[in-house]
Image 1 (cartoon, rainbow, N blue to C red):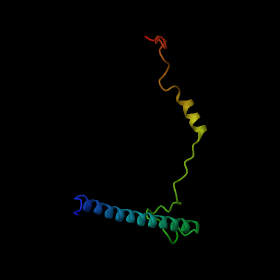
Image 2: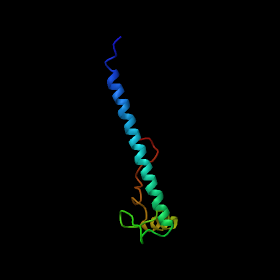
Image 3: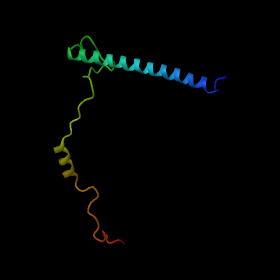
Image 4: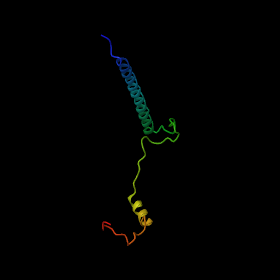
Length: 97
């Protein structure tokens, strides 16, 4: 009995997919190892002295914390006034016109 004409391309796609998945796992593993090593070096105080980041900024590991200052927002809103100014009195709100 002969093979289906789609068997070979399907097999090739499975092999290439498995190779791509393997390569992705290698990249992820190496990235995590480098991140962990930099974090350990930063905590040990080596960053900026004997170990340098690739960017040269020698920042701590991870995304910097963003602080939302509520008081500053209230202050800015109060100083800016209304966004569009007062609404015209001749507008018929809710009258269905």
